[in-house]
Length: 352
Image (cartoon, rainbow, N blue to C red):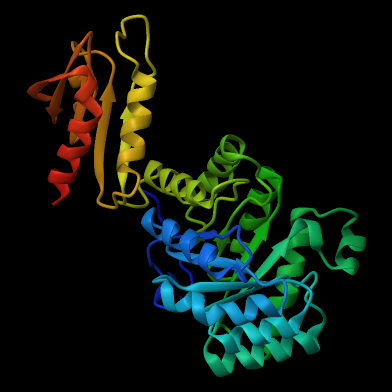
């Protein structure tokens, strides 16, 4: 059993982060917010697969003006991601953003941060101190010579101390690097020094397969050690994939009970059906199911049910025919072409 690190608790909209709350899954849209319809549609797809907080980029004033329209159409908290221009951060808070992500390496000095914090206090808006290895403050980078974990931690601590000086504690912290090992080291160091909630992620992690591997190693290692209160898997591609990978990581560590846990055999010479196609059909048909259920898709009628005995429900295919089973017990035979359809229907009946 994983014993999670005890942290303070903050709220982003109606979502609790830290303080023993369940680990929160986040993502970020790939659209420019000025395309309001596309942004709303993407967020709704993210909601369908279980995203609990969504972040949008705020590169200019047109993005600010879109915030109220977007918020009216979505049901999860909205984070404004701001770089360089502190005035955009202030305007985003005024426009109704539930949270704000700022990078201490490029948002400006203490005077600008104070103006942001003053507005966040007025609107009770949470802030994420988003340290990124690629954009550390010049003086810190010069001191360490490279964006080492110690440099990232020093950047975070500098901003933390300033926010505390302003009597502002409504924030979480992230220390993101494209290096898996640097990411792990940085979070380990900071977790020993502060009790604020931590947002985990590997930045610029790449396309889905590479991102899944990097994120599973970095986030999985930290989560197993009890470090982390909210996570984002960074993927070059459809952000819905980020959410699905995040939940797979959490499920693998028994840190959440959400959605379908799909198990399937890797196929072998005994397999007499197109198992890969069958698994893809089932996975796609169940991707929006949020109820926790273990589902199996096996390629051998003889051994499949026994090998997947722990599954709540599953199918096993043979030449021209397959079976539906529950908890290892055969329920009925099914024609091969109907296997995916029947399983999807049975799962939906199971959770009703």
